[in-house]
Image (cartoon, rainbow, N blue to C red; front, side):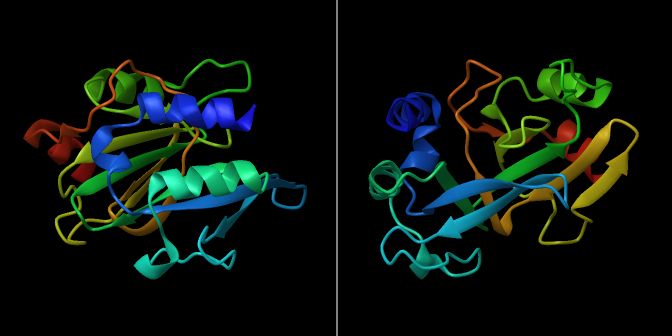
Amino acid sequence: MLEKRLNYLLETLPKEMQALPNWLVYRAKWNDEKAKKDKTLINPLTSRWAKANDSTTWTDLETAKNFAVENNFEGVAFALNGNGITCIDLDHSINPDGTMSELATDFLKRFAGTYIETSVSGNGLHIFLKGDVLEKDKFKNRALTKDGEVEVYDVGRIISMTGNVRTTVNTLAEITQENKKYLQQ
């Protein structure tokens, strides 16, 4: 089942991301105290902890995928390292019944031209774009709204990938000036 899901991820994931050596593997385990999944991030080359700020703990996607399948990990994860790829992480924006908050619906429309997937928790979205939304950390990367939490990351963060796509687009769109201003506000 995992291999089938990861092969589907390879079909849907933007080629730009697939080509980068920014991959590792993860396991997710439910934590009752936190009421959410805890993720363990592992370097597929050494079987030791992976680090968001250490590219020597990452590898190519094929190696990560094979390691995940052979060692029964939940999936693969992508390390953001300031190379021009940004991830908007919407948390708590999809209800248990699958309905989406106004914010999630707006973001799906606003960013429909880029790769978007449901997060590991199932209650959020990962939206991947090209461009420097935070302008070298000039802007805050987090905002709490009535419809969920918006986080924007472009460096020093690892995103666990699901392949549970929300759009039919498998490319990374360049952030528009309009959407960049919207996020910065």
